[in-house]
Amino acid sequence: MEQKGSKSTWLVVGHDWAVQRLQNQIERGRLAHAYLFTGPAHIGKQTLGRALAQALLCTSDTPPCGVCRACRLVQQNRHPDLWVVPADGGILKVDQVRAVEADVARRPVEGRFKLFIFPDMHLVQPAAANALLKTLEEPPAHAIFILTAPTAAALLPTIVSRCQVYRLRPLSRQVIEEALLQWSVPPDRASQIAGLADGRIGWAWQAAHDDTLLPRRLQQARDLVELIYTANRWQRLQAAKRLAGDSHQASQVLTVWASVWRDLLLLHYQLTDRLINVSLLDQLTPLAEALSVVQLRQALVRVHRTQRYFEEHVNMLLALESLFLRLPRLRRTTF
Ligand SMILES: [Zn+2]
View 1: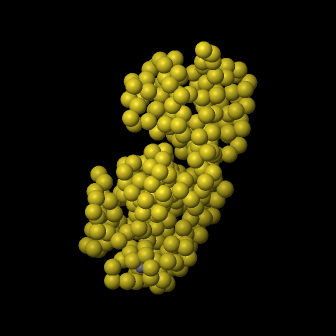
View 2: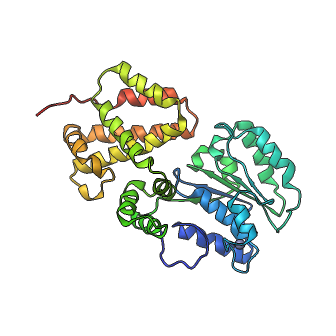
């Protein structure tokens, strides 16, 4: 649960229970050797990982202070005792894990700990996962591993069992709005972004700093509406093919579409006060009336399933083609 008024100095918005638990472990000297932070994209997994690294490497009396040299170097990925190992070209490769393996036994350069952050653990090659597993089985006392992934199900159970797992959940709209206001985003814009963020603080931060993000998101939602009115199979397959070429964008589009289907279900039940895509109300209302609850639910389930396929490396083109062909079809009516 989100708590308010936490006194922690961690530069993390929300996820107070996780911060509290980690802070307690640091104070008692009872850290795990490996942590796994799971949750949807942009929810704050990496920020929490980095904050944990700061808390352990900070040289002030009140770690993490956020301003000492160590804290700043962690923030910039330049601390000598911090390794951040992102996927290389969409894959976390065995060579990357081997490089970590070769270094892990060496003593830390500056502090007591050495931190290894793997932000895309779900993109790991099987050989790399096995190599990492060996390291996780007998880590040296100074080594702490921080893995992040959308879900634990995307990883080898043997890796998950070596980790302390933290399931991060979407933040409330209010927590996100307050954070945006603290970042000096004007109130109107803060409220709009918080409404669209769907609990993802990282997305809200991006939207506040990138003016193209909101218009792009709106277009992605409109594209879905357009496809529902597109009966032509070939056109649907072409649209799937275009999207499959860009996995990053495809993942964003699926998140937006999930929010549209969720809104359509809410509209169907006339629950209009919790809508996310408020600016599309005129286009969504006729869809919610014309489609059955079964169709709406199926469509939402299919989008969620496709999101899972992405995390599990299923062939993206096939997954998107199947999704696009099965979207409900409607004929546009003119009044
Ligand atoms: Zn510090």
